Length: 385
Image (cartoon, rainbow, N blue to C red):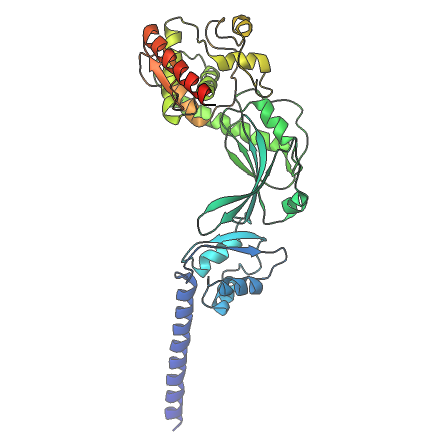
């Protein structure tokens, strides 16, 4: 009899163990498998937020199918106490495992509100945007010039929110003075920068920063990024270029950057200037003359005068031979690549063609025809205003 009872007990235990194992296996599949979310959402974890509240928010928005499995999975993976304040973009079909990894990772918000100091050639603005999770597009909420204002009343409080992303964007072609001037005008950075970095040595790109980030440290990141880009592209340079050093290539890249904003033209523009150097011609490029006047401290805001085109400065390439002594702006990676791997052409001239690009010419006669066409376009545009 006792053997029969023991056998039945063992059978029941085995069945229960199998049932438990089945439940565990089912729960694991629920935790790591695709979730029910049909469209991307943005979920906010407030400062001091709990895993239980986070699970409730996710379930309410249809991102997870079972709160209990979500919490157990987080506990089992030792992530339940690692929740970080922020706003997190949850992709369609994201698993519970992926969601908890997103919210307990680096703590960098991937959606919600973004504050971006955009340092441009003609203007600098602080742009406040909000990410639409469905489209992945940023919708602009506010924009202001930190040098002029007015600063929105709630801006300081907004920047203090833990889930707001802070970024600094350096646009191709800005000068080092413009970068330092702009950085000094926003309160979410700290510290002073005593010296303006050498022209051309700051990488134009987007930088994510934290509140109170030290300005000098950010500038060091910019310098390191540009140094790395220049070194990598220098190793891949074409044969036969006239540069004595990477720094000379950087000077050429800055001229290319200022002469065209059309990506497909950069290597052509570089070929024109290299062809001129090869033939002993002067570069004759207006942006260098302008830099000699402004020293990179803002834009000229008017056309060049004939006296300025004739005046001798180290940057007047209508007067001096060869390259100017330093870059005239901070060129992006594409312009550096163009200076180091230019197109092989016979072009010696270019002028605006009315479409936003340029018309290139091999001879002065062809160039004069292109100039005449451009002046006719300018006249038509002037008559239409």
